[in-house]
Image 1 (tube, helix red, strand yellow):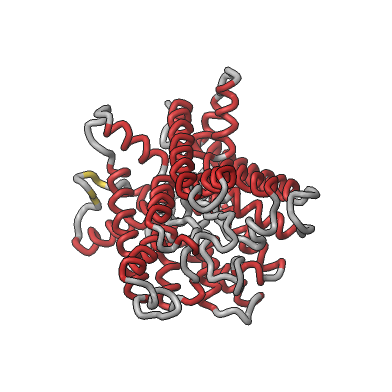
Image 2 (cartoon, rainbow, N blue to C red):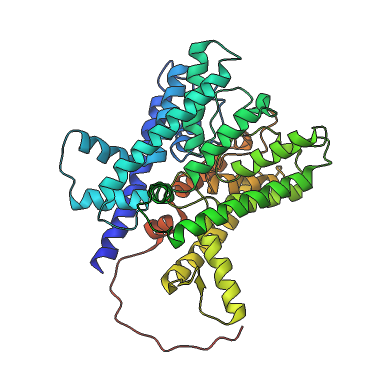
Amino acid sequence: MKQTHFDRKTVRFLFLGYIIIAFFGAFLLRIEGVAKEELGFIDALFTSVSAISMTGLIVKNTAVDFNLSGQIIILFLIQIGGLGYMGLGVFFYVLIRKKIGFHERNMLKESLLYPHMEGVVDFLRKILFFVFIAEFVGGILLFLRFALDMPINQALWFGFFHSISAFNNAGFSIFETGLVAYRSDFWINFIITSLVIIGGIGYFVLLELYLFQRKRLASLSVHTKIVLISTLALILSATLAVFCFEYANIKSLGALSFFDKLLSSYFTAVNYRTSGFNTLDLSTFKDASLFFGSLFMIIGGGPGGTSGGIKVTTFAVLIIYTYWVIKDGRVRVFHYEIPDEVIKRAFVIAVGSAAYMVICVLLLSLLEGEVRFIYLLFETSSAFATVGVSVGDGGTLSLSALFGDDAKLIIIVMMISGRIGVFAFLVAIFTKDKEKYIKYPEGKIYL
């Protein structure tokens, strides 16, 4: 029981930490000269939370409304969110040769969603090395492409900003209209989507793939296999859904060539995986497309990475469990049984997320009744899953820019709760630590 109690305290501490950093980020963004015009507190907090939660919903245009210093602050918040502030904190501890105690290790384990206390600092070292290498390579590749369109120093900044934003699944762009101008550019589409996928499958999976490739692992774990297979299946499904629903829609894909239709569908599908870049105007999408897009966003990416949502592992466990219940067999996958505790947690996450989403979208509907419900559902799903795609405000901002302060606060809470994870959020807010000595008789319920 002591460990459970400590974990709950740890989760609450992490939650409080993100709130404090979000307010500090809002303070920095309101410093004179950071924004080109005076920035209201709610808009500053919204931008800070969107960056640290790696969401990408914007109520101020990053390219137009912020100076270079503001863009640097936003990028720094994105990097903190991607690695977790405890990850960066321990990194600096290691640099100055400070000893990492039990409390710090446990905080780091929760922050990175690492399964064990043992080896968590070494895991962080490997992850930091991989993250910086991936962001550096991505930045150089994007720089080489952007250098064809702009001065060298500008191309360098744009390359590394978009590389860090993409790897951390943040979706922030310093192009005024996002990546719409590069809709048909295979090079940009390929680099951005690759960074999004790599960052979104989870650090644990990345480490296992590296060790497996170096022949230091005999086989991949069940977790890694499920993440990889589920991610591939969901990307293909989402690509097919966008392609089929929007194929003849003259406002979205209809006027494009077949190759550009396929490329834009794939780019949109990958960014449903919890990044927020766009090459299409999503307000032109059919309701069916937006509905399925909401479902894909809610599923999210892999645990322990830069993605949000209920996670692909939760979705996969529920599907696998349903299959074996119908078949009347033991719940198993790849010749391994799935523990009851994992199945229970998956159901808690799914049911808790559904209830949370329903409450938030209904509140938004009451506050912003003039906005179409499907648009509110899409925006809520994007905030909850820390994705960042939006039907927009009719210009270059997210739909949230049209909301009043009360509705913006709801989106802010959804983004920061999405950053720490649904289960962790429920634990931090609703559970209490107490011993249980009473066992109740079982009651029969007929379904």
